[in-house]
Length: 145
Image (cartoon, rainbow, N blue to C red; front, side, top):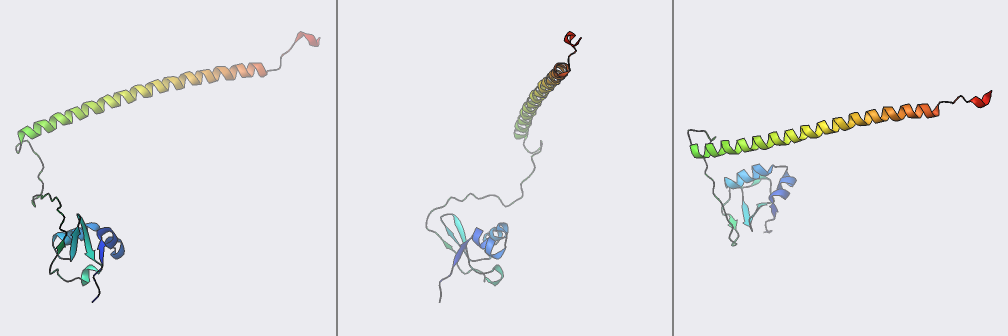
């Protein structure tokens, strides 16, 4: 019997045109054969629809840190649920708004300075064009008489 070939999730995803999230869901549900080596998942090199339910999953002997998250949906924070956190959130939001207003004010000042410079440059261009026309105009001299 030939030894099983294992592919990383990225390689498997590319080879069988399956999204990484689908592969991770199947691993979580333990509906595919997988190995966990050094914190990296590997799947058998077979299409998902041909894989049998796993009899045994192989995990590496190296310790990996797993942080468990609650299975329930995350709730939106409202004032009734946690007043202390809500007050802190409102305070942070106020600081962000203040910083945003300050940045906008600085940008508006920069825009006004640039508009003033453009106006000065346009005036200078007009003056130079007038002087250029005056210098290029043929002069009428007294020598011709």
